[in-house]
Amino acid sequence: MIKGLVITPPVLGRISIGKVVEKNGKRLPEKDDQFTITSQIHSKEGWVKHPLDEQLRAKVPNQKLRSIPVRLLFDDPDLNLRAEYTLFDRQTGRPVCIGDGETCQRRTGNGVEQHPCPSPDLCPLAQGGQCKPYARLYVNLDEQDELGSFVLRTTGFNSIRTLTARLRYYHAAVNGLLSCLPLQLTLRGKSTSQSYGTPIYYVDLTLREGISLQQAIIAAKQLQQEALACGFQQESLDQVARQGYANAVFDRDESDDGMQVVEEFYSEPSTEASSADPSQNITELQQIQQGLQHSVRVVN
Picture: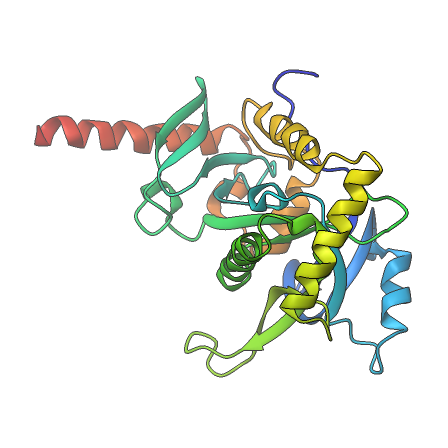
């Protein structure tokens, strides 16, 4: 294994609830009220739809894809859903700083450094909405490739909070057999004071329609026994995935899709993005850090 290279689940396609549109000469993200399943190919018109998108739409009356049957690859919730605070360089699409609310890894001119992570609201580097919670959920849709995944990326608090809760609740309820549960992604709508009554949509993870929790537990135990009988080792698979994630020096997997992520989840480019010098982000981060350190020395 190449050291320093994060190894993530093989990705067959994407699941999104939005798209990028052009308005007044700018490419801006636009939310949607349905799922779209795409391949990994991006054309001038946008992401090319995956054949599964049409197949699943044909099964719903109004052609609006608001639920998708899925299976999880791993029993460990943290292997299925990876979520951190992330600050992207708007010009290169590369992550500059990633944290979990306690500590963060920050790319600087001196390499990767570790710092306290006070969360975006309290971090001087995150002002102006530059740092957001950023999550990737890996799920399996294609039964012919049981180790392949489709990735759902989101920066929405509602989706991240709901997905995290569901994964941990189900993990506890079925004694860890997450990968054996019959699940589905469900799109839900809600209105908040910040949305001024306009519905906003977020992603939930539920049992498939018509299946009770008791039925799901029985089915999960049966599937586990069948897997063990044929020699499948879920625990070993989880461990290999855990080692793959931990193999990275700067633990992120967006080297290829960074610019698409920035374009999809950030409505306005920052002042750093207009800079001609790609290293300016790092330089400004270092200046802020030095100022903070100086302030601490003065107080002491």
